[in-house]
Image (tube, rainbow, N blue to C red; front, side):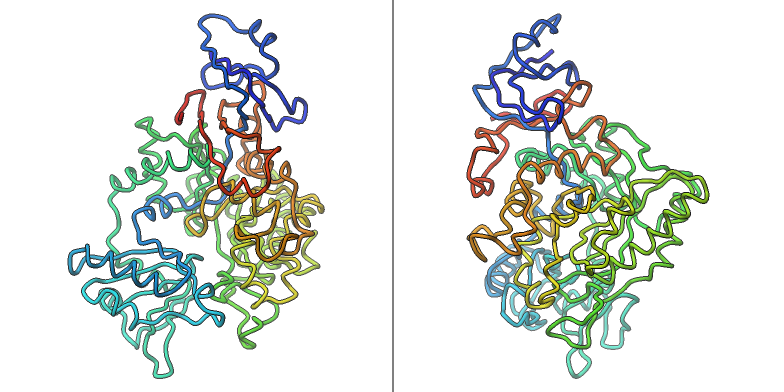
Length: 529
């Protein structure tokens, strides 16, 4: 047994919100309360640890993360720079230290941060930076890619290559490829990049775990595909998986899942099946999020709608028939509208067929039409959102969506309507650090204090308790794990983090530098400083 005492414990348990000691046996919490009382419950060998007044919280969960892409991305060129020139300098530096002909990979660029007009980078610029290597750089949004000529040639893309469904090969006025690939067109280059071996992927994920522990994460909802799932299963078998992983599966696998009879929740306490993930549209940055009205700077562009509500419902029906919940990427107001229409049909189908009303989700919910804002709560659909997107995207949202942004990243509205919030990061789109997300949720400001002391659309701010709940209790609920995760209470799993300061007594700006000084998962310390 372990007895941690002399601590400030925020349990997230409404029945017992604050305590000073916690008793743990094996992987489970036995009791939370005061030291004297817990000592009377302890038996056998008890390891007592004085926490010296430090703060203990339940371990946080990132409810939307791409674990494979994040882990592999730790070795890529960091393209999240303030200027295009700095990005190109980093690419050139990496190319100089890479053998000719080998791929140079990077991630994180955002043309909207590089210029006030959102001008796209060019093929010639990337060719000049790395003339002897194929280069492929994914955008921060993961909805656009930037390739040089060597990469385009390796992918056998010509000026006659047609645009794939739901994707665009950007071309100049002469019809020549510019090096920019949007949405599904990204795969034309991406599939040419040599994939990592399963061994390499396992090593990358294992190496990423301590970084996530330090950030205060003890669990993730993973949105990558087959290779990620295989690596996670292998790590689990070898007892090397030290994060709780709720694993979502791609919509193209729904037929196979239906044939197998695979259900949401199947697995164990380390790795279990979540939902079937579909994509309804693109993203704000590349102007591919599906909107009712055009983008302010492109009067003929309403984004890309991958399917309508009827087509989505067909996928939903196949999932529901075997007990699989659905989760759908939707950013634009039109995309969210279509998803809600499909979910309305799905709720009726579940009732008519006597099927359970499962915990369906929308990923991002970045902007809603006012008429649709109450519908998530009405349909009991989880709002899986990423607060860190708001300060990152606010200037682009103001430029491209204008006054519509009043219902963008609208966490307070969703909470007030009664929807369950589950918070994440969409890493590697953003940092998976939940403290940065908490800062965004309670301030709606960037780290430099912009746009103002009040924040961007300050009426959408959350309290710290509400935001923290979305990373703990809400994330656990979204993963059908609320009876074992998200709180520090009797019979819950002993997943917790230790902070040197009380998160509820510090200035919100302190969240920007806050880290876990010790992390426990399954009753064992995985990180101690």
